[in-house]
Length: 126
View: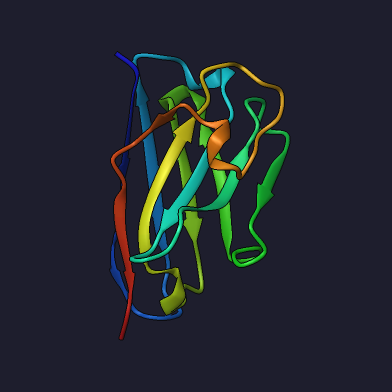
């Protein structure tokens, strides 16, 4: 059964860093684009970053450019989201997602993805 499991969330002070992990099971991530999304209370789910299956192309939301970095370790079947210089407005539940088809591109549009993890809470507060 295909499954995505996020981890690495927590409470961090403004300006701090966290690294989120998204571990896949039941399928090989090598062939799939991956997206990271977040949803804050009372807000719609927002695309944060995505990476193509090859790892050769990434896309970021303007709100996180220069602060967040998406990467993947295909040997570990895991994708990461390194988050630096965190701000209170980054507080949200973070999700990773994978499409059902091996596309050559990625997207920060939620409708592109079929499979979702359960999410991990990130809270940025002093």
